[in-house]
Image 1 (cartoon, helix red, strand yellow):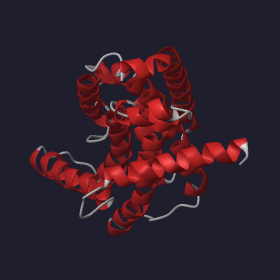
Image 2 (cartoon, helix red, strand yellow):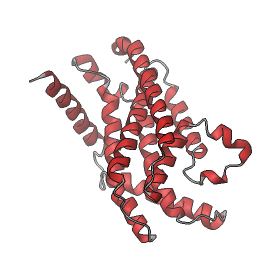
Image 3 (cartoon, one colour):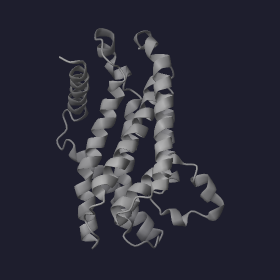
Length: 255
């Protein structure tokens, strides 16, 4: 087996294993990954549009397009906390690239996001919006890859540091929840007061979620946003690789 084929086989086997573990003894399987954002969108739609009276056209589509993308981030980061710890038997017994473990989790959630795109198209169709843009053929892959790199870099940091400090799990859950409300997922960016706009602009995930909104709602992709997302992806990978290289030699004794 060639070097490249061996690496592909290792990653493929990890993905298969994580798929089986994730949906073991569940009735609906991966449908939960589609149902959860839909239920959340329904709740937030009632709360924000009907109770708090947010006046925004096609608010349901806005919600769905952001929530599916956010679920990928949320599941990847929260799942990363125990990525290495839950695979200590493999880490201690086998010789393979350990950094593939969090990558397999990120990849699985990326697949779930890809499977959600037809659902988003259906919502677009229901709201009399174009259910498909030809621009998606290059727009979606660009943002998809960048989001995967961001999620992978951050997952490497979280999974590695959690080997040293188990508090990371709780801090990650808190940070993910806070970032959801500080990112324009539930509300349009236009509603953010000017006094806070500068602080919101420091949030790297803002540009990622806004890019998904632009793609699905308008078939547009602003390349200044892509620039910000690319910088975030490179930075995430840098700190992820650094954390992994620093801590991974101690995995066996820390686990």
